[in-house]
Amino acid sequence: MEPVKNYINGKWVKAKSGKSFRSINPANKNEVVGVVPKSGREDIDQAVKAAREAYESWQLTPAPRRGEILFRAAEILLRKKESFGKLETREMGKILSEALGDVQEAIDMGYYMAGEGRRLSGETVPSELPNKDMKSVRVPMGVFGLITPWNFPVAIPAWKVFPALVCGNTVVFKPSSDTPVCAAKFVEVLAEAGLPKGVLNLVHGSGGEVGEYLVSHPGVDAISFTGSFDTGKHLEAICGAIHRMIVTEMGGKNAIIVMDDANLDLAVEGAIWGGFGTTGQRCTAASRIIVHKKAYKKFIERFKTAGSYLSIGNGLQRETDVGPVINESQFNKVLKYIEIGKKEGAKLILGGKAYRKGSCSKGYFIEPTIFGEVTPEMRIAQEEIFGPVVSAIKAEDLEDAIQIVNHTPYGLSSAIYTQNVNSSAIAERDLETGIVYINASTIGAEIHLPFGGIKHSGYGRKEAGGRGGALDTYSRWKVIYRDFSGQLQKAQIDK
Ligand code: UN1
Image (tube, rainbow, N blue to C red; front, side, top):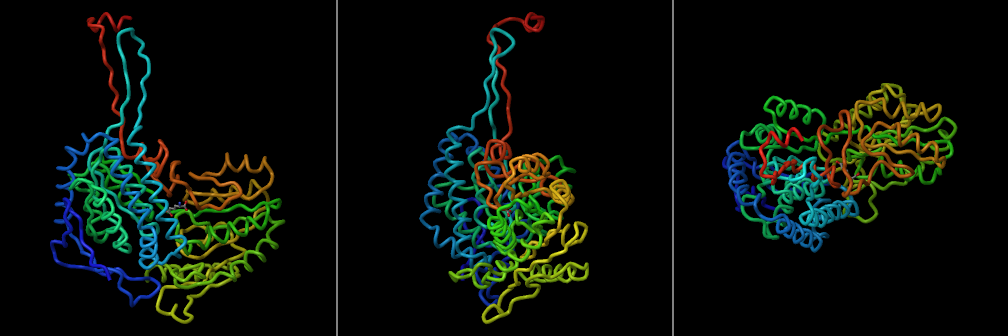
C-alpha cells in the first residue's frame, strides 16, 4: 500500500484537514492501493498560490530549457514503464498490455512536447507597408487547472501536463479520485526530472469538493477537463459565467459501420477490441456496431463467437483479455443498462451478467455483453454506458448507416469497414465525429494529431498533439507589429 500526498510548492504534504480516503483495486476490493489526502479548499488555495508565484519565472524560462525537463521525464517514465504499468493495472484494472500502452503514450507525449520546446513557432508575414514587420508568437495562458479521468491515468495527465508546461504555464493538477496513486507517481517523475518548485502542483480529492473549487478559483486562468458530459457541462457553465477559457473532453457513443463488402475478420476484431478493450471504458470505445443488413447475420455469429472466447479476470494475469470495471457505482450503472436493454426489447446475444467465478467475486467484473436487434432510438444506443456492453444495429445501406451513427448527442470517434473506396470517401466526409477510422476500430488515436470530438463529446479546442491540439489549447497568440519607418502614422495610413 502506498501512502500518497499532495505536492504543493515542491513539497509532499498532507491535506490541511488531515483527512484521507482509500484507492481500491477494482479486481480485488480488499486490496487498498493507496491512502490519499482528502483535500479541501485550503489545499487548492495553497496550490494556486504556489503556481501563481512560480509562473513569474517559469514563463520566462526559455522553452527549449522547459522542453529538456520534459525529455528527462520521458526518459524516467521509460525506465519505470513496467512498474507504472503494474501499478496502473492494480489501481484501475485494465490489462497489463494496455496499461503499458497507456504509459507508452505518456512517454511519447513527453518526447514530442520536449521537441516542441525548440519550435513553438508562430508566423512572420510581410506587412502591407515598407518599413514595418509583423509576427505572431505563442505565449502561455497563466495558471492552468487540469482535471483528469481514471481510464488513462498516466497518458491523459501527460496529454495535458506536458504541453501546458512546455508552453510556459504553471499547473494545479486534480486527478480522478479513482487513480490518485498513478497521478502521484507521475508527478514524482516530473519532480525527479528537475521541475522547479510550484510549477506543477498536485491536489487530490473529490470533484465536488476540490475540482469545482479549482475551476472557479480567481487565481486560475484556464481549465482543461476530461470526464463525463454532465460534469463537463456543469464546469463549462461555471467558466462561462466568469469568462474563463475551458476545454472539455467528454463522452462518446462511438460506432463502427460494417458494410456488406467488409473484410469480416478485420471488422470482428475491430468490434471486439473497440467494444471490450479497456473493458469498454474508453471515451472512444465502440459501443455501437452498425451492420449492413446483408452482412448482419454472419457478422453477429462471428462477433458472438469471438466475444465468447474473451477471458475475464485480473489484468495482471497474462491470459486475461477483459479486466474489471472501475468501481461499485460503475458496476451498478453498467448492470442497470443491461436491464434497460432487455426491457427495451433488445436481444441479448452474449453475456449480460456480473462475472463472479473464483477470485473474480472479489472485484467488479462484468461479462462482455452483446445486444442484437437494437434500434437507434433505444437508450442503450443513445447513452454512454462506459462498460463492456455493445449494441448491434442493422442498417439498410451506407446512407442509413451514416445517419444512425450521427443520430446521437455525441460525436467523438467513428469507423467504417469497407473495401469500396467510394464508400470510405463518403463516410470520411459525412460522419459527424472528431475522429474517423477507415478499416480500423474507433480506438487508438495517436498523440501527434489533435484529439477530440464535437457535440456532447467536447467543447473548445482539441486535446493531445498536433499544432491544432495541444499547443493551441495551452498557449495563445500574441501579435506584434513593429514600425521602423520613423514616419508619422498619418502618412502611413494613407499609403
Ligand atoms: C479516452 O478514452 O479518454 O484513442 C482516450 C484512444 C486512446 C485515447 C482514449 N489513445 O482510444
